[in-house]
Length: 95
Image 1 (cartoon, rainbow, N blue to C red):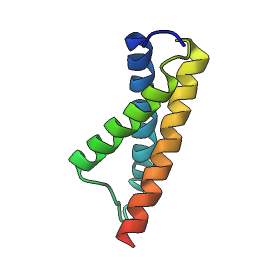
Image 2 (image 1 turned 180 degrees about the horizontal axis):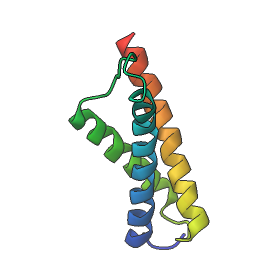
Image 3 (image 1 turned 60 degrees about the horizontal axis):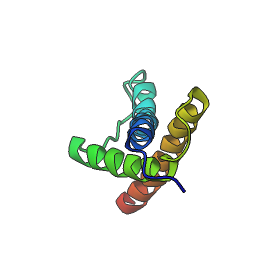
Image 4 (image 1 turned 120 degrees about the vertical axis):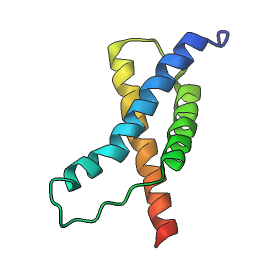
């Protein structure tokens, strides 16, 4: 293994955070089109903590990968996966 690459970590950290953000915001944007739907959204600080911690995990796992467009897409998809896991945990806690 090579030494820790902070630029690689930061690159993947940013794109995992974008993936988590997209996963959590897209259902809200879709439900806003129908005013009869109730919109469930986390408080801003909970959302921020989830995105930052998920991105920390994603950046830690992907830091050694190259910084190329396919790996950027990989990190965004990893953010979607982290967002779905966290969303299922949060919805289970509210049930």
